[in-house]
Each structure stands twice: as C-alpha cells, then as structure tokens.
Amino acid sequence: MAANHALGIVFGALLVFVGLSEITGIARRMKFGGTVAWLAGALSGFLGGLVGNQGGIRSGALLGFDVDKRAFVATATAVGLIVDAARMPTYFATQGRDIEAIWVLVILATAGALVGTLFGERLLRRIPEQLFRRVIAILLVTLGSYMIFFG
Image: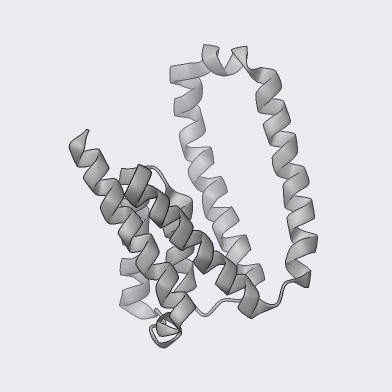
C-alpha cells in the first residue's frame, strides 16, 4: 500500500510539473519528436498502467506535441477507446455478474458519454487554441495535486 501511495505521489508530481511547464511556457520550448516521442509515449503508457490513471499522463504527453486541439482530443479519445476495448473482456470475464447487476447505470453512463461527446465537440470549436492548452494544463496541475495530497 505504501508503494502505491509513493507511486501516486511521483505520478502526481509529474502531472504538476507538466501542467506548470505548459502554463509557464517551458513546454513550448520542449517539443517531442523522433526517439523522444517514442520514449514519452512508452513512459506515459507504462506510468498510466501502473497508477491506473492513463488519461492524465496521456494528456501531459500530448501537450509535448505540436498538435491542435482537435487532434489532441481525437488522439486522446482514440487511445482511450483502444485501451478500454482491450480491458473490457477482462472486466466482463471477472466481474460480469456485477456489471449485469448495474446494467441501467452502465447504459446511462454510456448515453452520458455520447451526449457529452456531442456537446464537447461543439464547445471545442468555440475555444481558442491557447485557452484550450491552458485549461488542460490547469486540469493536470489540479489532478496532480489531488494525487499528491489524497492519492
């Protein structure tokens, strides 16, 4: 349990660092490419798998690439869908009865995700690129701080 907490603190500190790097402008001078991009992707997947919070570290890694907000969201969504599709068979095999018992909640959550996606796509068009990156950075600092203090 202590190792888990320590890992959460390290992971949280990394998220805070990435978020603050974006806010201060340091991240714009450290763009990923080539081997560094591959290493960042592997490291983000590894750390996300260890801690169980892949979205945060994936967003942090994506900030290191020069992609616009639509590509950022599309990439994060596609990777998330692939990861979820890979782990769903395990969930159904090990917890199928528990999932079946809350099928109404699962359907409502799925519908909420679809509605949120449609709403989010329209909202994304209206947000300037710079504001989008700043919001992502603030969310990373917030998530990282939470993990440091409560994770």
